[in-house]
Amino acid sequence: MLQAEDWRQWLEQGSSCLQRLAQASARTLGRGRGAARGVEFANGRAGVWRINRHGGLLGSLRKDRYSSPKRLQEEVMLSAYLRKQGVRTPEVLLALAERRGRSWQQHLVTAEIQGASTVFAAEDQLSMWEGVGALLKQVFDLGLWATDLHPDNLLWDADAQTCWLLDLAGAKILPQPLSRRQRQVRLQRFLRYYQKHVGKVPSSAEKMGRQLLAQC
Image 1 (cartoon, one colour):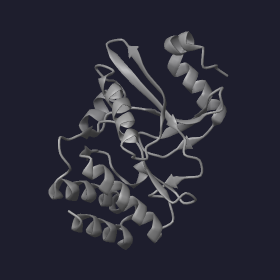
Image 2: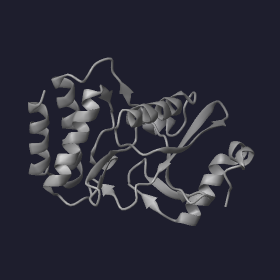
Image 3: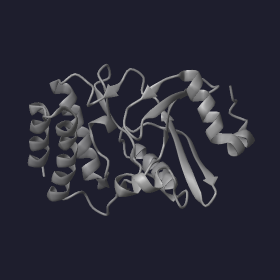
């Protein structure tokens, strides 16, 4: 297993190193085009490895190829900023951009939140939706515009009664808090995820959304 000081090997063989760690872990986390894999570093830190991929129309054309490392750099900086503001988002353990011909592939490893499950997979309970609502209000008030904000990108830690924000790729901080209309758009996107994957939106999720908008 690689040691932390093997930085030259990481620079030269980064994705291969991550592949070996993921094979040793043999854990797939999440689902869809951005399904992540568990890894464990030599220092014992458990992480979640994700490769950035384009969404929408670009997804089928560009897949995981980017013109520069910029998006990964922005995600790392945004993560640090949000953590400084008190937002629960996992610590970045490794960020690696690899040149592939004329394009770049972007790898990100964040700390694994042990014992947590996605909000989508978690048991429907009042305390969870209170935590979701509090987290969404916090990031909306900070001006966070996250295009991929959905229940599989939020983690619920039932033991600690805390909610975590995942996957900041493509997100940005606006100059001011989100307007009521912008919050409504993000919430609609959030709730549509349930409609798409299970055919209906939980009443508790709809109630959380109404309460959040009522606070504007």
